[in-house]
Image (cartoon, rainbow, N blue to C red; front, side, top):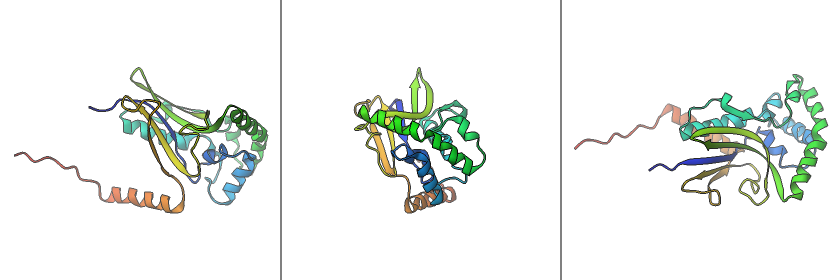
Length: 205
């Protein structure tokens, strides 16, 4: 009997996924973005790391793997930064404009800390009346929760099901960034395309 999925949370990171870096830091986010861009971690235009679409594609894969027919348009995405900032075409002007948000995110971080919480940019897949509901947004989570303790470049997926209730969820965690990890994953994907796994068909007696 297959287990029934009820809820999926994930924090999936990428060397260029700035949203995952910024919300873990109390420093002014424009400084973090500029530093990451100078190190080559960002997309050519950093807004492509902050609009939430990269995270949306990942939760879309999880939803489809679970068996639901969904598209990007079915996901409610709240960008990491307000949409009006994402319209700026100039990279330098875009980064400079984000200085207006430094105080805002610092206040959000401090307010969360006062409640024993931290900020995480979270993708959620919830099954409501047998239909998938997908959303992505910046959330406050308890500091000692599975997402709250997430550090470094780790990926984490939290699955709540009939077998694994919310107080004891099924958790998958592994490194999600770094040259070696990325290279190994790309190599595995390429090999899977070149040498697809053959389905074993049981022989009849």
